Structures are given as structure tokens and as C-alpha cells.
Length: 77
Image (tube, rainbow, N blue to C red; front, side, top):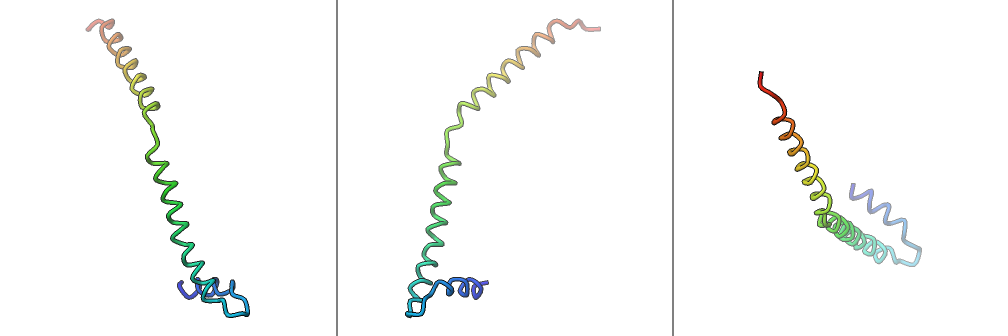
């Protein structure tokens, strides 16, 4: 796998001997992309989701109230 990546990166080289410089640049871009991806993922995970939670809790409270009302109206057999 590593040899294949080095072959792909080696195609960026020109005939003036700058193959090492380009290879190092491409290898340094890999952690940069990983850091940007981690930052995007971190911001997505830490977003504020309390608004959706409150709506769900209010809906559950209405459901509980409706079930309690239905229980008091029914007569035991």
C-alpha cells in the first residue's frame, strides 16, 4: 500500500529533481486534511441540540397526561 502511495505521489515530480520536495508536501497534506476533518466532526458532535430535546420532552409529557386521562375514564370490569 505504501509503495502504491509513493508511486502516485512520485507522479507529481518534474524533471528538475524536486521529487523529494513534492513527496514531502503531499505527505504533510494528509495530516492537514485529517485535522480539518476532525474539526468539522467535532463541531458537528458538539452542536447545541437542546431545542429538539425540549420538544420531545413536551410531547412525552402530553402523552403521559393523555394516558392518565384515559386511565381515569375507564371503569373496571
